[in-house]
Length: 235
Picture 1 (cartoon, one colour):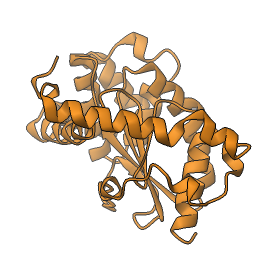
Picture 2 (cartoon, rainbow, N blue to C red):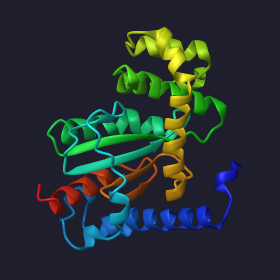
Picture 3 (cartoon, rainbow, N blue to C red):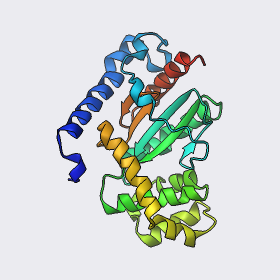
């Protein structure tokens, strides 16, 4: 176990996020509204929203690990690991639908945070994703790394270079240098620190305008949270 996961402060944050995630996504909330997709943007829909977490959105127009307008009314922060099977399921089954429905229409921005929790290969894949982002190909790398059966091939140096080529990274030699450089390590450590301070010790974890969602929940869970956040923002 990593040293920075130990201690009362992190344990308390983990307990808070676990409770908040349960409160935000518990089944009775969806049942009471009939379906998540049709839940009204009411006071009940705003339960479980934490304004201090909404401030974690970076909204940097130069961020290569984000998609959507920097001034979009809703920001979904995604904490994920490339060796996480549930992260892959979300990336393949749910995220493309959210991009088509909300990102492409200017409502949603998705900001990625690397949260490698499955050892050295996770760390290496996270740095590689960041390096691909330096050349404007993060989301293409993301798609290749989360393709069906991709994680079973591992994330060794040769495999990462292959994924970079699949993603259309222009300069693979630079990519390989960048992923092993100090800037990549600092960027991944920054994301890890943010996630662990929230108590997001499992992946995938999400914040939608300060509303936590734990796990690869059904599409309707995300659309209900995004619709509620957009309505609150006046969109």
